[in-house]
Length: 160
Image (tube, rainbow, N blue to C red; front, side):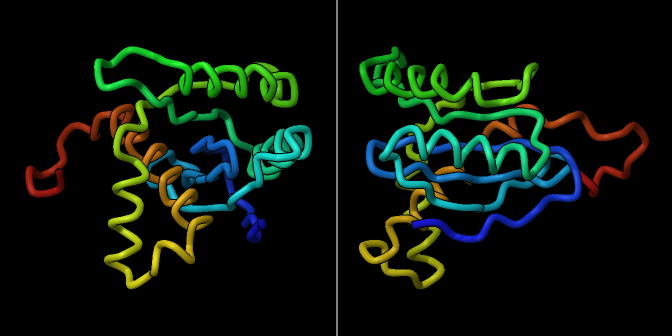
């Protein structure tokens, strides 16, 4: 189940919410300020999923990949995080050399995505692929917000 992937006028980031059944894909604007949903990719068959994500990455001219990393309640990595890291290692050879790869704690990303969709009037049971995309948006936006460049000097205080 895939939606249309829109082209991007410049480099940005791709965010992924990895799941055993589906992978939510989000992209940033060229400035790396805002994340938006792109597509939901079926996780199986795995080779096709890896190829599709690499294709989206190339089509968008992305510079980096942000992977949601499921941490346990104690902040440590468990078996779910290991699956994500193995997925990234399978994907890495298909991405351009020098691709930046970052991990972002995905804590509550699916909960936040579900809340956003409900607020928009979407029934979440019938919109699971949208939830995956929305979770990828939350993951990517959290990363972009945490790594945003400082505002230029001399802006009025009310601009922040």
